[in-house]
Image (cartoon, rainbow, N blue to C red):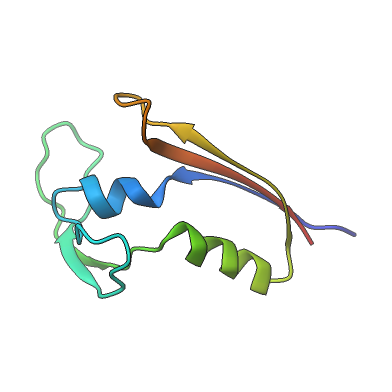
Length: 94
């Protein structure tokens, strides 16, 4: 039986370059301490945690090493600036 992987996620460029607490360096692999995302509109901090930011190459390599074959990768424009990627969708089969 074949396994299907369908992943839709923010494009790594978003979190690495445009998130104010992010590393501002697309290739940085060090952990970054920042607030836990709060879905509540009050914006009250839920505490701090450590983040590790991945490049698109890191993500694709992990998928391949897990035994998947990439069928399709689509990058979608950012909602406010259509000249940069905002998210991506990956389809892979194993």
